[in-house]
Length: 465
Ligand code: FAD
Image (cartoon, rainbow, N blue to C red):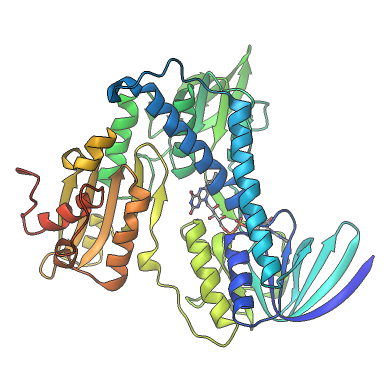
């Protein structure tokens, strides 16, 4: 059934953190904006990604603390998991935040249209909602369709009990044995959540190390040994090719070995969601599965822009958000570029990992004569108070000038601490700039300060390397 056709300044396809931020910011700058979303606003991040996983992570951490209560002189009789109640807490958090975004969109007068959109031609989106179709005409179109779970062929991946990250957010019981296929960010975050909740966890990764490409190699290696020490089974250089049922259990065939599990989580990454929005027919330039854009987020078609997971690179909500802010300026008369150097990568494992800028190997490959300085969290007073002493701060600096090229953290609240590293990389700060910035005591950021002092072999609370 054909519906009405509308003309606005900007139409955004997809209401995830890329799309809704682009819509809000464009409206803030005076544009008339329509946002088309086929499910709930908030996208992967709010509904099935960042927010629900971090709600579970936060509770898992509390549980670990409760179990260690006696280390702190507390007596907790029994800390046990009520999974349905925990999932309810997670869902309430998600619903509150989605409600908050809906409220903001209303308040900024962004018209949210429900339906599945396709790019009909530059300037026109077609939208299908049930059997009602309509057209939206806009001066600018912003594509923000996000990503979908990568669909690598593994025989048996449709068996009951073989799940993706989305189902792992709604389990009704804690699996006795959880096998995670893929030692990347999403796989390891769930491994840490369910390990804390009581599962015996096995992680199988096909490359030679965990977190391939996501952080500096020494950090990934340290995490691997911490997780093994805690009792996780981790195997690298192993490829899962088949899953079958064997009695009540799932049997995972990898190389010459096999593993048994009650649930198998497939966490082999995500792909840009670009196959169903009408791009191929229109000559939109692609880069593999991703939409090709310049650093202003412009595609090769006039006034068609793209942002977020759909353009590839780091698939992270804050990267999608900054691209959304940049595109909002560019469709309202501005001229802004995304500075990817200061986009941090964050991994909510236990302990957490966060990285920004170049790794040591990347610095070398880019021709820098670099120096690595470091500080261990075991020597940081706040980390000791919290009982979270595993971890390290690595600073990659240009040897002569001390310019900070990269910051890599493994340790408590690493995902918060990286903000200082991102600012340092963004501003081109040096190790001396950080070292002469007074950091409050006793706090975790003092570990970053000490790593900066170590650039001149002058760390105060470390006797020797
Ligand atoms: P999305 O959030 O995927 O949103 C795209 C939206 O477009 C969706 O709502 C979809 O319904 C809609 N859409 C798609 N096609 C159409 C169409 N044809 N018509 C209308 N609407 C359409 N990132 C972090 O930074 N930190 C984290 O802690 C983190 N944790 C994660 C945990 C998990 C389990 C997962 C899966 C991801 C996580 N991410 C995290 C990644 C983060 O969720 C994504 O990078 C982010 O959501 C990308 O935003 P986006 O706007 O590009 O796309």
